[in-house]
Length: 89
Image (cartoon, rainbow, N blue to C red; front, side):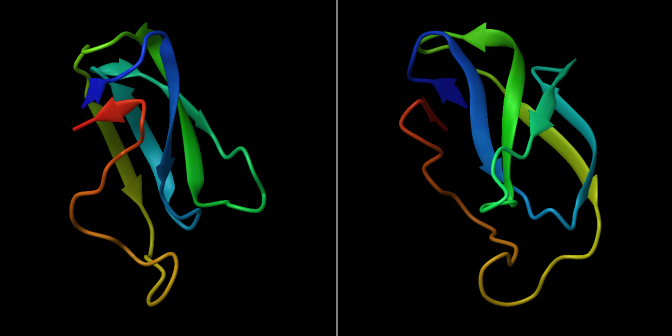
């Protein structure tokens, strides 16, 4: 991905709470995450080990396990989406 803003320190991703995250890396460095809202428990807010600035490329790697929820909201989505207005693929 590529940052579209200076001082980008976090990014929200969606991964259903039924999955257990065993590893979260940003550019190969260990990162942390929280689930900031009980209303949207599928959202994980990733905290970057170092801030990203405009046009800086970075990768996020997530290792997880669990049983996917089938059908409707919470289902696994495969494909491309615009990430946010702060970073691009």
